[in-house]
Length: 360
Image 1 (cartoon, rainbow, N blue to C red):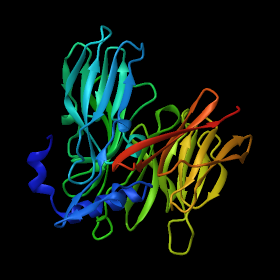
Image 2: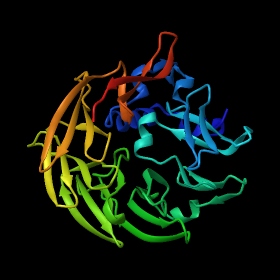
Image 3: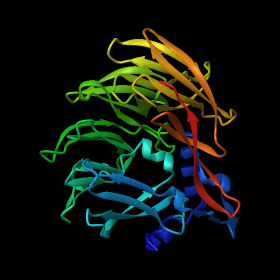
Image 4: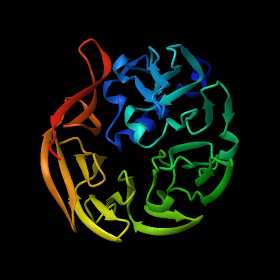
């Protein structure tokens, strides 16, 4: 089984607990279904419903992520990667994808087709349909682990946020055409405030501007980076994501002892606040101006649908959530597909997809 050689390095229960805390912060954790056997964590089996597919721009090639039959020791999903050719031949790609949860696909572009002739995997390797492999990992430089990496809408740049071996927070921007690092921003580690699990996010906005959050000096801040120059946007805030067109930014604000957390939608073009929603939310964009908001506390069984109309943020509908832990939603023709993860009666972790009627 893949990664077995690393078991001796990470079979410490504390590691598992720390990782689970990070995932719970974003509304998902396999720890809820974990069993302890002789103080070693074991997990339910992953099901085929967790598999994922990514088609090339011309729909001739397909990349499939297929789960291995066992979870990794920390509860992560290990995916084997296969490429199917136009002739129907399926061959295994010599890379693996290790995903803490399906919800991580929002923060990390694990598979991105850069053209009809090739795709990027894990933000580290470029794989052509002809079989050639190019390693981008040296361009990460001092970054040892990335909590978020995203490809620009025009598929020409890769932005990532991670940490060094000294726990410094690092933002890097890589030009995928020239294979050069075009921007690096470092936030030095300051004890004891940067000791928790890494949950920093990064996202693309308008005109190839990058938005990210960093935890420095005991608080989270949201910055934007343009032409290699960072600017502070929000204090006491965490980034959620941006709308598909990059115009709207979703952040969690109120991260102080004196405040209650709330979710804010900010117009990056007009530089105005479109609206606020109570509590910390997971935001899933359906269109450039419409999204689903789900309470991260897990106390609500409903998803609220919001639309940006003119200068206002309006709630237009409410959906009941599927059983399990909500991880995202997308629009398919005349329906909204709500995705969640739960454990089935036969003890397997499964993906649940439910459709809700939708009228534009």
